[in-house]
Image (cartoon, rainbow, N blue to C red; front, side, top):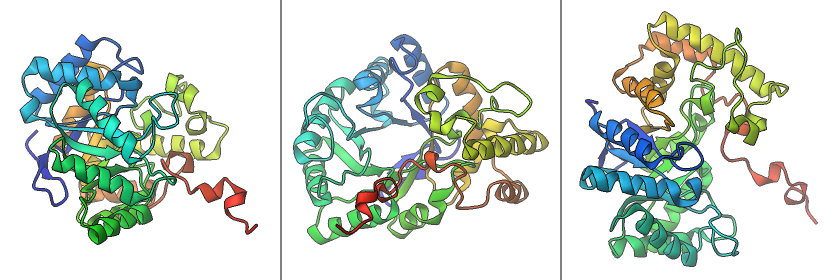
Length: 344
């Protein structure tokens, strides 16, 4: 890996591919030794950025990452990111973006990761029940305590990103230095608002699911039987072929696979190279479960798509279009709850 990019305006340099650890633990690879091998191979290839979250395998992902970094002796060379917000217990305060939970969650993550500090601590989702100033105030205290270096958001809609930037400036608080949204050649909605907002406020962008949940892995072709996975069972709205949006995804995936072949690339290389080519994108998260998955993805870091290929991708899926709204990561609650749209 020959290129490193500055994360927003921080001066912190990260690799264009970020190793996502969601599949380490009982959600995916349950052997800590194999997870450590995958992490070690990524670091040897030049990846210096690892992203996990407390909710991944209910903390086991963080444990596996911490064990692997301790074994490698490379903690100081790694930009280590994790997140809080998701449900981590039965209690009503073991989730969300409150000061109380953030303070507890960060201590839990530090313990599981076996580290004294977290380079990037992200709020996994927006919480409508918590004032953003409460959240930013708690995160600011963690930065000043030295437990966290930088803070970021994940899957925030553009207007919430802007709101958080204004609140930070108004109250002299630490600001979110980056956003982590979903983005791929099939899920391009953020090009219309999130990416312009990030550029306007000098935020880095770390995109998740650049392979569109496996749709751009090469396994989804019109000529073959579609794979059945735990992910498709858990998220049928994103894989059920009776849904029109998923039918559109299959058609687009087929056309993109043909384009990749014409360009002398694998579909994985095409998809990842597309994601990191956008000028607002700092890094794309890859989430391998096996060493084979990792090896198939690492080569994309050095692929640069021509303008002709990018134009063809735009013809297949126009800029700003998400083929299935279920892939957007966030939907305004007013769309599904009639009570939020109607005056009492």
